[in-house]
Image (cartoon, rainbow, N blue to C red; front, side, top):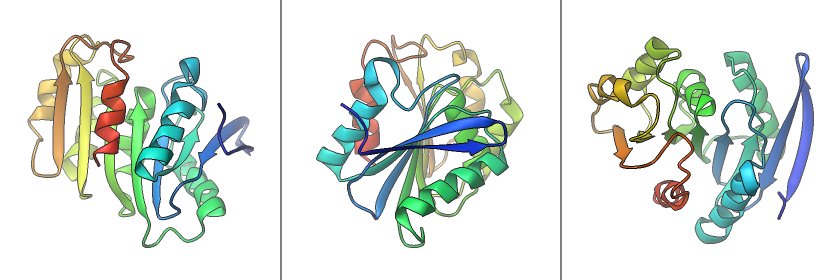
Length: 195
């Protein structure tokens, strides 16, 4: 299985890859993988998730290859998104990030008023802790959900995030799951499809 469209674009000195799966042009999910992650993921997990979300939930999906993630990188990603979907006003935009991708989304995307909801899976809290906590505190979209496996290395810092829980910010811990959610990838589909 492959994406409906794959493009490569040079950003600074790096070649970035974007995979698209086209469903509704008004309901868009951005996926950011972890460190060194490709748009496909291990055993095509991202492309399979994108197609399933398109088929069962109507999402269009843009999956971005891993980068270091900066505010300027975010604007570059938005320009790629706009090239495919046009003006983003009035569109429902959701974000799903894993590990470093979750950190990048929290730090650089959470203050974007176009983002409706975010699911951030196992962001490494031991890196950029103050920035992630600030993003959690200031997020004003409909819902930001942090999802951790109980075996994730950041689990001891999760109580810091829990202090910021409120109506539009939730922190969930799934017992027995590790950093990669290797026991049940299905929970990721369930969480993102329910938004």
